[in-house]
Image (cartoon, rainbow, N blue to C red):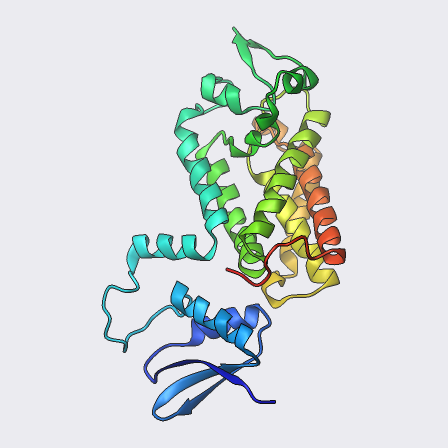
Length: 294
């Protein structure tokens, strides 16, 4: 079958990052030399457009021989810019959590107006006690945003960093393979699912964080990889076992003697919701979300 030439670059250009991306997407290609240049060919014109789009977005990494200094910036600024190009929703969510953190207080006991506005129900401190309405009363009052905003709340730097790293690890895989729309769909489903699960089993509304969403993304990746394997969704075999085992361990209350409150309901609820999302999207992959977009 004749292949379509998608790219022709100089011999000094490093095509390995681009090839790794194409392998991750399961896109067949061939690299060969012709006329003193490197050529990359794919099966059809649609795949060729995908390759050119990735090239334009900077997936190729280093271009030492192109003679265009400054086009692909290096350093922290260049890395952040490239990350936003590849996974804009993942990065935007992480940055939003980072920007909100200084206004939330350092502990769950420090309930200011910003934190109270983001919790699943509004909280008013009274000395060592807190007062809060029921969730049904809160929703009837029109505070529907509270189903999503607990995911933005973090109570320590370690809490924020840990969740952000796993968000990047899992979120960028889905966004790179199935598009920003698919990841956004998942976030809109996983955030309220994990928050409602925690509220149902918890004794108070002082909980938050992206960990329920992170476990949901893990559940999605595991289920989709099992039912419809993709190279980009292939996680180290020990990783899901480790994270799910950690969830089970924390559910025993082993962290409570150390003063560490863990939202086990959010973790389990997010994991189950993510698995359900992955199962549904394997059966019905359409819904108008562009696939294979970065």
